[in-house]
Amino acid sequence: MDKSFEQAVAEIRARDARYAVAAYDFVRTGLDFTVKKTGRAVVGERRSRHISGQELCDGLREFALERYGVMSATLLKRWGLNRTDDFGAIVFQLVDAGVLGKTEDDSPEDFAHRFAFAEAFVEPFRPGIRLRQNAE
Image 1: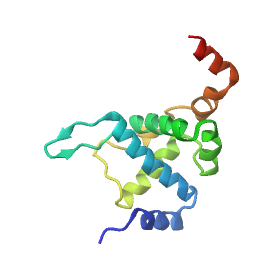
Image 2 (image 1 turned 90 degrees about the vertical axis):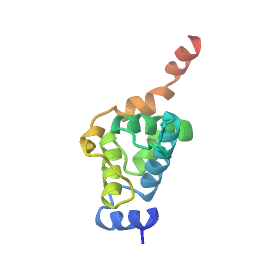
Image 3 (image 1 turned 180 degrees about the vertical axis):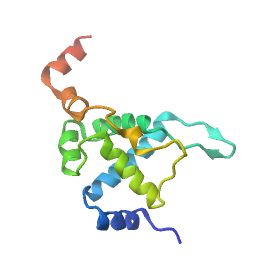
């Protein structure tokens, strides 16, 4: 019998408690958001859900900003997510637990240093930034 997502996360966290349960939920829900947003084509009778580490990082950034807005940076930090490398660590923990799949070409390095969290989650909410964007 396959284990549930919740069981897998509990087992992962028993070995490695760096990330809050909410971080795993965020990555899983953000992955679904990203797959839907990319509109992957149907391959045969099955939809190809595979996305690259870069696509997932970008999707998680967009998902966080859409869902949590100005609170994104605070929440991600509270959950132990401080760098895109953390997204990759969670993905590969879930791969190792059998919850997510990967291709031969996928690696944790695909998530390394993709963007700075301060630029991604704080800068968009600085007062001057909004005014300049609205003026265009």
